[in-house]
Image (cartoon, rainbow, N blue to C red; front, side):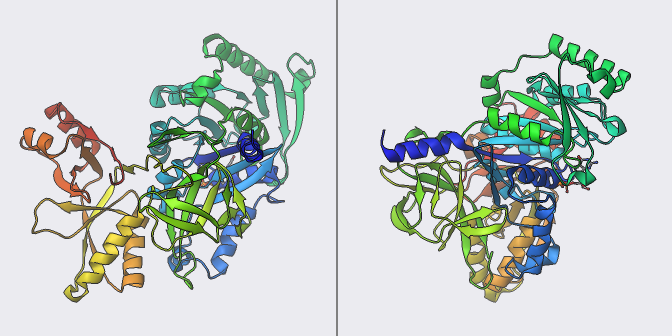
Length: 534
Ligand code: GDP
């Protein structure tokens, strides 16, 4: 084996890449901070939030980001732990939920599903879970906020099994909950981990580890908690499935962990089990079949474009997931869509500490490249024989509005702006089938996307626009195209539009109307996702 091949193989073996999927407030920021704390990337948890605040103080972030006090950018946090190199892809959430949140999952090898113990599964988590399932990503479940009153642990497990159709294997089981949360039992290591609360979990939590069968446990936890734990463990051993690493890697079984990110209970155990069981960088499907990450030729694809991170330079950054080989600064690569050759200079890596330029990157890493405007979402970069990665699908938008240009003299700029923003993947554009109504319909998964489009049309193209909201919340592509739609006859309770590639899309007011359509027209195949372009 060549030296380079060995180097790539070692890099792949030590890398673990994941994204956290959760609903706002479940504790993603808190968990991220604690994970970084163990990675030694920051010395005191709290720095992630501090970084956020500091970012607003400096001026090189998009004006709108500052006005709204939110972060539009998803970055990659890289840290080391016990010889592993970990890449945490930060998925935008909250008010900044957008298609980027979905696309980030296209660059992930594993997902951590963070659930609030009191709330159980929530809408944003379910949507993100669906996207993970399209790629059959392994899902690691962390049930958070066990230091507060929450639902019964067995009920939470049942909810995941029933509603998501995932088998579960609880690796950690909680000892008590709320005020009485004492720690966790590790079913694989067969150890009790009892925690002591430190000041707001700022430091690594103090813990006492006691093996199963050690008599000291009687003195350390209250008898009623011990009995309850024993009963529950017996039940899990009796009816629960065995841990099956293959099923985990196929996304069919989720290992479950209980803890409290805020007080730092269970986070370290979670991280260690995760690193042991998570997939290392995976092979991606391409026009040349699945490409192993250890292939020597560098390949990767664009999963996100970020405009105006630095308004002084009006630059754009293209985020690329490295899929195979070794990336080196200033290397020459081919751009599959245009056939052009280009030199990749000024690459950036996004650290917990901020942006830094990089010299090399390996499969599972993400690099940011200054984008002269030639990159689109899903584009493949490669060295060696030509290949193209599968691309990133677009997902059903949930909000729709006509975008009006009240000033006819700005027609050209308006058209140009709308087209460029669509190509960049900032928003989906649809059109009414009636040729006299050529005003674009903006379609997005989050309100912020509309605001970004309007803001950028104004700032970059000098066009002031108006939005007229449409009352739809669901889109479905007609899988077999126009002939199938015509064959179905009259369609009630849906608006027929076409996407940018003139494919038919039906817009519905709600899911109930979709179900009704499926009942009325059982032969009409509808899909909630469409590939991007062709
Ligand atoms: P995000 O919206 O998912 O990023 O959630 P945050 O990390 O910002 O947390 C939302 C709120 O929940 C904050 O007030 C946190 O302090 C709190 N929180 C996070 N983790 C825990 C936990 O384990 N226990 C308790 N009691 N609160 C938590």
